[in-house]
Length: 222
Image: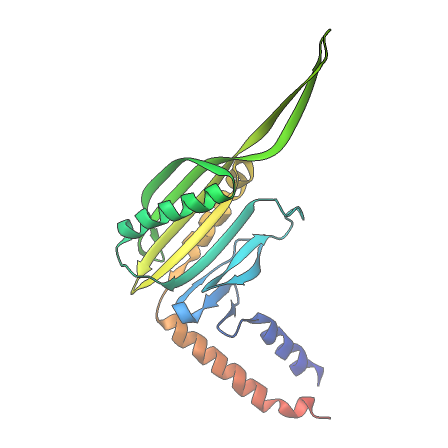
């Protein structure tokens, strides 16, 4: 009697916000026909519109620890990658300025995502992290010197547009941590799949789940 219950809870834990769920190793988002493998050591943190954000399992609890991955999809008003990239640069610069990060450079290269032409854009900047105070004693008085510490911040966007849908992967963090885990983000990019069959497969899996629920109702009756 316990075995069906355990199996049922396992399936329920695999569900994600009614529209996406884990497919063994993959996270599946059938509404937008895509799925991907979370990098080893990363877990879903919270749902985003058309996707989710990921964080390191053993990341510091410090809320200012700036290392994250986000995967999103949504309707797009253009199918032109260059046009979207131009809009993205200005939007991201505005967002970074609001977080007190000065953008020094934007690198843009051609890439592939889910088998389709994509843009790979790296934003390089620096952020004023905290005030640093130094003091020096002279014969006349104690002199204070106040400054800020700037730590390089990197943000990477990889995106493609397919059938009016924008697929966006973003990775960001302080330079040292960014470089340390960059290969994990690259693994996610390699696993990313876009296919209309994904939705059909997801609907079939969910139908089987519903059939399973119906066939085991008696287990939960007192």
